[in-house]
Length: 438
Image (cartoon, rainbow, N blue to C red; front, side):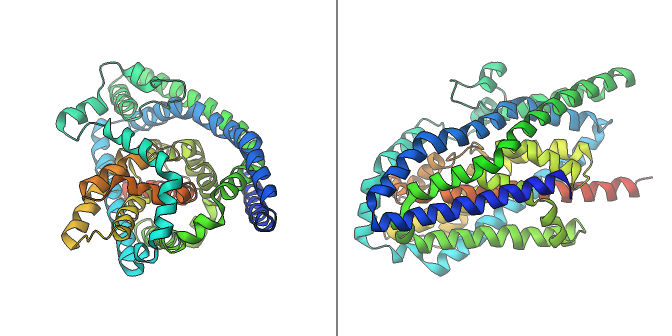
């Protein structure tokens, strides 16, 4: 049994134990509320910081790993004319993936009509409890400029690259889009160097990637303990009351996310990548567990690269190009969630969104998901903006904030799973293309 498989089983068992312990705590809390209050305090004081050690170790390596893996991926192409087919297939699959995901979410929300199951008393209670967090999300959304050509230039090409990547504070992860563009430019320039110089650049990039991967190994040793601590804390803080009030919405979102990951992606694996879905999901199981526990596409990038290399045997140039881009841009789970939330809140407030409005919503959800930061809760400000766009009170986001953390874990799993599937499909298509080339 491989080390990766053993670690995945330990993390999975930790996840099960954490969920079971949290459910038991909620049950005891119904009989003895002070016990639940005590465990919520312990979760905030002990379990959350311990989980953050695990997450911060992963965040430490995100910036250097995105740069080196992407620059290395482009460099390994050897010839710049190979970048076009790789990029074209990648972006086409990204868009198709997100559009299909949003369509699935909207169909389920229209079928289940979860907003009509939420009575006025429950809506008022949720708004009162989470209204402050909703206002924070609205204020963050208000500071974001509208989309335009000038905005796109600023997003990808800031005047101060180092300042943008470093972040505005010690708590900010920094902007990844400018780093992605710079990494592609470095890789493209490296392909134009003489053979020996290009190999030296390749060796330097790969060496840094290997160093970052070893740091990820340190973090993963904490995972079997950090994962149950984090999931326990999430569940005992959310509480059974919020889950019951939003049960139809949560069940609908979970069903849509599962259908996209294990339905749509299984079809892609079978017919586009020519692999067995059952065997494929077994190979990426550890990655999906890591995504669920971290709630961060960026934090999972090191694990994605490791699985692509060790388990799936993807070409380093393909994995190094597709996966860093996917961690920032291929947010199918997030796009699906955004569509579901807007439709759910519209139903709760009695705002009717017809077919034409929902078609626009699908497009906007795809475009806004690309701009979402790959960190926990990164989609909330953009959802507030979408609500305002369709004349729905932005404060309505407060209805779902109570369950956002749990749904964030599920949609991150879909985001990361879709990234690795897309990389596999692109790898298969490029192998066929270059094998058929004279």
